[in-house]
Image 1: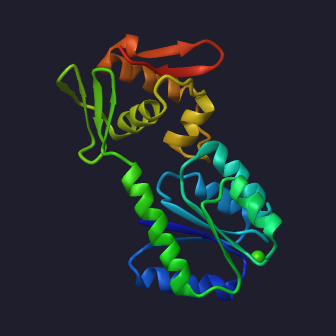
Image 2 (image 1 turned 135 degrees about the vertical axis):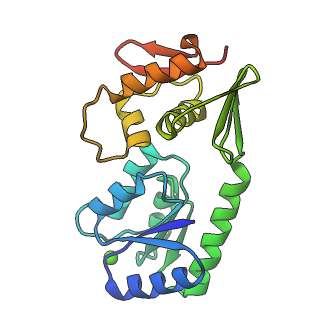
Image 3 (image 1 turned 45 degrees about the vertical axis):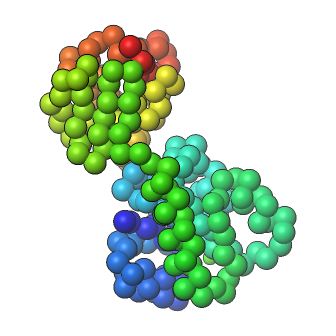
Length: 219
Ligand code: CA
């Protein structure tokens, strides 16, 4: 499990990092809002601990922008702003939980564990879309009962499409989620991979919505 800590106070970074590593988590650190947002976009990050008072982009805005791309990644806010209005605003903006500074490490750890547990329960290992099914644990896909051989990138693309089945995903959203936030290669990579996938799962399953993007549908 990988946790991203977005915090500019070195003392807090050091103590949280030590504690989380000792608890067996992989820890990524960003010391400003810009790096924090870029790292948080990655699917490799399982939970974000986010300070609000940050250089670059303030934590509130990091949260709002992150939620547009990753609506479900758990976010725990660290804040010194101990007012009811701020708390409500943060929870409304999509924070899952918050801690008021100063906090104890054991309290943070308890909140993290609780959040990761609830994500695990809501995440099933198999996504089914009509006669297509994707086994996330085994990294395999089946169509009409026959197994499909996919490269890891094709699998990642299919997984994103399947998680949002029936909804249109733009080329930019697919690039961000499958290739990463900073991808700056040729943008027709999405088109190329969609075409590979169509060849393998059946062209009719992935619909092109002109000017908008692609969607996977139930056939
Ligand atoms: Ca700060």
